[in-house]
Image 1 (spheres, rainbow, N blue to C red):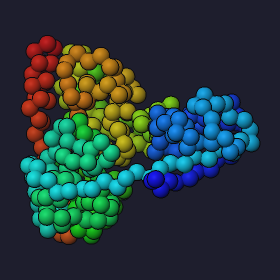
Image 2 (cartoon, rainbow, N blue to C red; image 1 turned 90 degrees about the vertical axis):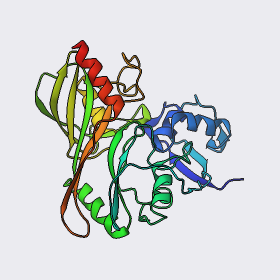
Image 3 (cartoon, helix red, strand yellow; image 1 turned 180 degrees about the vertical axis):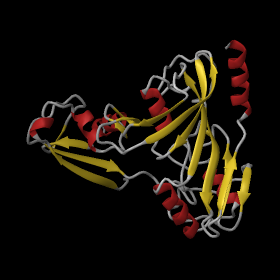
Image 4 (tube, rainbow, N blue to C red; image 1 turned 60 degrees about the vertical axis):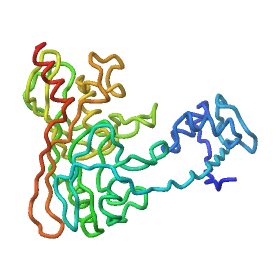
Length: 308
């Protein structure tokens, strides 16, 4: 039997009447509601010493105990996967990540990731600050987002790059196609982000969340769409996608934060990390890298221009 982590919760007055599955999912953000329901079905969630069903309504003073089996450790292996290397030295490596590639291993994606490719390419010479599943990974971009990304080969480089991320001194510019025509030529979205209280797998504008700032510049108007540059001041999860969706301009192809009905056959949101600039950890020299738009993105722009 797997080892398990045990969590204990006492139910307060204002939590009475809430469903047990929702309560546990909101109390442990790493658990989705479906995962909680499976735990309940397995008898791993008890209230006052007795198993309950997912629709059990909590009462003030209830004692909730949740036993979560520890996941099996993933074995991360080096894989000979071609990489588009923009720059490399003994301290770091800059990659142009293709759309569809996951950055680091996770349940369901134990192979074929950028980390698997980096382990082979760098012969294991990657920083260990983020552990065995994320060696060298200083920042990440979504699976369906393409573009430039830097990985650290040494802990010294990792700490320097992470510090630049933290103080917002790194240059990060993304190109995207947004739905609907943005009236302003430039605008700044300053709205706090946090976990969506109704769906912990998603992010949302949340009062009291972490400050998130995105600077938007319209590059080209394309009828019902527009090509925009989004420059990150902060780097929160799904920041560009949530920010643009929050003002009525979700990214084309984004079925999570936009409409499930999309006018084109796309593999996720049309979003490309185009520019990345930072101070080299060892030399202090400012370095900036710019990547071309991937073929699918260019082809889409041609279609939109013809229809505009």
